[in-house]
Length: 328
Image (cartoon, rainbow, N blue to C red):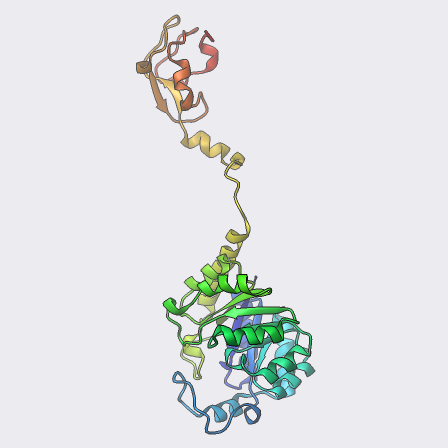
């Protein structure tokens, strides 16, 4: 399982800041960092509406101001390699795919809003590279159509809900099980909630990728920062997600109790003498007590020693041993 730190456009068009975000993501435990490649003149009209969670400036101007050129993208990719992180990016136009091919990107992340963009899907499929397909605003008819196009490639379908932030009740983790049953491909989860509970559950459900928005500060300008995790939060997030995945992948054999040998001695109980039992006496139930440690005759055998004759004196609080009891 891989954890994706979604940087998006939090960098605000500042290359130095983008590089620092990569460094912070690496230190926080991410496996992959994801950016968004916006070339506004190829993806949006100037008067296109903006989402409710972003109204500081029109999107065309924002994308124009915050976009990088090819050399800057090369520097970003090189920085990812320096910190041993995979560079991932979402193209929002056919021209963005061309640019990403020049960068020799290893796989593609198709954002939820592009799932129905059939020309884009077909162009990416032709690269024969792995695809992560987000489904945040699509129904099964639309997802089925995209699946039929993209299944030729190494495909991962990502469950997500395009609500920012996403209330926990709309996380839709039930869909992960449906995806696993319905589609012959890997399944991932893109988490837009403010917490980590849904991602922990997703990890236990066995997803292959978990994506979470990442920022250096939630107070930064832009559409993503206020719904993202800061480094300390993200570090803890990664730790708990990976622990959940370890729990999922490691089954316990309840019949294998070797590792509890010392604990059983400390916490379980043995049969001990409640009073002095002289040699030659038959053991009665009233002669017995059950106390720690558990290194003597196990309490489950107490009926087997009742009415047995004692061969040697047994002192009060002495752990009873088989060698002090006659067999018949």
